[in-house]
Image (cartoon, rainbow, N blue to C red):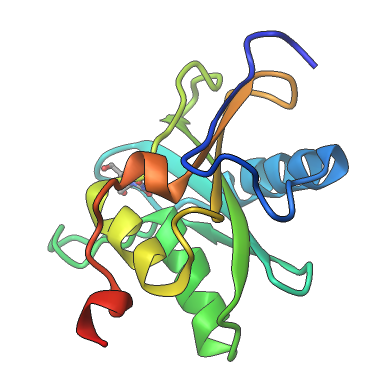
Length: 157
Ligand code: THU
């Protein structure tokens, strides 16, 4: 593993850290999902792979729309697929994104709306977000790090 990989964690000790093979599998699945991207307007392709509490991987791609507003990000596609199948526990998500035809030259961080959707279903101190340029070059951080002081279901209790 290259030293360029960083673990930025909001929690001091993660209860169940991601294992290396899981990270590789998630990145592989996210890269495959990106190929399904429907993005004729932005030509920006995104793939996501969501690791569920019981170890399944649920994928998603971005799905654009001629009216622009109904566009759905890859991350939310993965979450909504999973939740609509009755899955409510999630451990991690890998995300890859790039302009159509390009190599993965950037880390594709989740947009604010997707971070908020993650907040609905995930413990921010535990949920792991992997942004990858390749199997070797990726960063891992918690949702807490990307959405500090987030508003979520706990606030309404
Ligand atoms: N997109 C995602 O799929 N995920 C993000 O977190 C950021 C943006 C998509 C939405 C749109 O289809 C394209 O990237 C350009 O914004």
